[in-house]
Image (cartoon, rainbow, N blue to C red; front, side, top):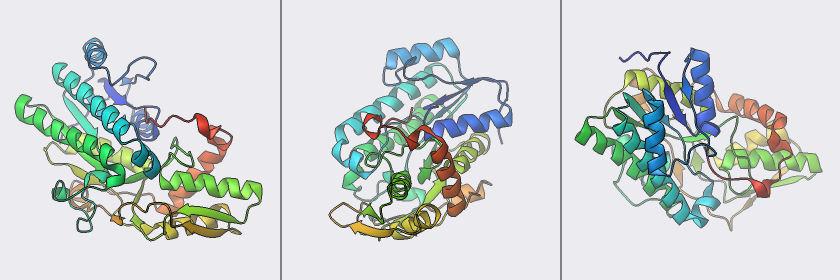
Length: 325
């Protein structure tokens, strides 16, 4: 086990997004005194020269690379080239700079979408690259796979202590609640909320409602990231999930009960379903001593409370930018 030094500089990329902001909150709670962040106005993580200079100037000891261009099924499907381009540049610049600056340990966050569309369930880490990917998020998945393989390559060639974690579908405070560009859970929170406000008696849900998805509260993920930094140093990825899934219909029913019980559900089957099921096998994470703690109904209640108190309750959805950093 590696005990992290609370007084050493730790750099969290994407600190304004869903994942990065939760990690920063968790680090603050634990007492880390030198948390480094750099917004897009300070540092473009796609610019390799600027990133290398920033690392040389700031000398982080630890790095959690959580930044990424993210979006829901429609955004991924319609902007394949942009998702591939931006996410590839993000990890190539950060990993190279971390190697050059002799960072002691780096955690790279991938995504469960890296796994084959039709692989056995639950999904074990070794299923990676064992079959075709889901076409609706092909660009994003390829970029994330290349980041994982790059971490392994830096370990092999330079002896870097780079590790990788593959989270399942995430949600929580600071999520993107755009009705088209966000992931399914925050998008539905917004739809149910606005239907209740407008007095509408139905909410439209994309697809058939039959696909199964696993959802992990981002605060559980933040705990998992720090746990891996201290307890794991191997090239293979580690799945981070709750180990349980629900259908999209079941998810909608939980949201309806909490937000707008009077409304009816309508499923738009002209919209894509995506992968039929994505349930991660979290045996490896459990053996390392980490487990998710926040149950889905509780996590949704927390997230909806945050949503009601945030800018998202009145933001112009057309002005939203789909970046995690």
